[in-house]
Image 1 (cartoon, rainbow, N blue to C red):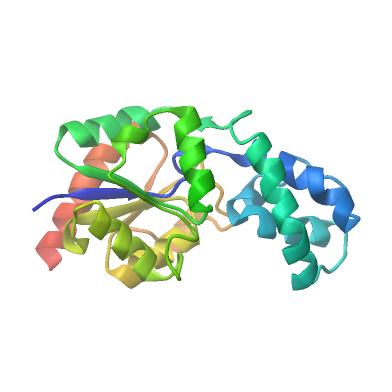
Image 2: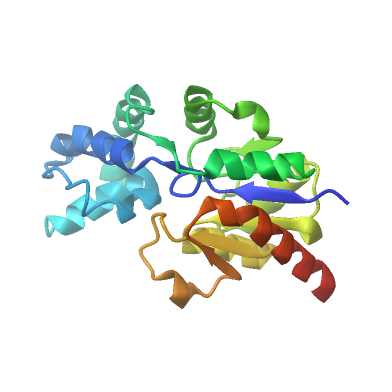
Length: 227
């Protein structure tokens, strides 16, 4: 049976923090908010544009309404698209790890809460899009992570099956989607999690992408044995 490795995008495959924060800072005046510090706000980048708006408001000691977020969100998306690959790059070793999986017969896919069009644009700009057997974004389905259906449909479209799949992410959202889907999960220590990964207790935590092929084989093998 085909094995599949399903990757989150922001904070897992690609370090997008600086470009997301820059887009937030571009729309901050619309919300009467001060700019975010790129270092301090790095972890908040994993929550996307809406999360960054709320983070900026909290840092300023203010509340921001859902209507304000909704009104500013299109401008955020425009600002982000304009610089989507200004500084964003694959994490070191990510491409090599995927290529090792592919050469071993794995299917590789992306399951992200970034809008699908922007996710595809980012991968197109960075290169390597032919690697992915499927890419589902936040708006590809009526649901998104942590709803397990987002992950399960990604596995299906990649040609895999849940009992032979692994989720590779960086946050609690990825872990909760994997747990609900009955899929083992490995989390990247260099990503955007605001919670210590040890406290989340995923099946595996990795620091280097060179470890991914071995981890994926172990986790899928363990899941198959327990099943």
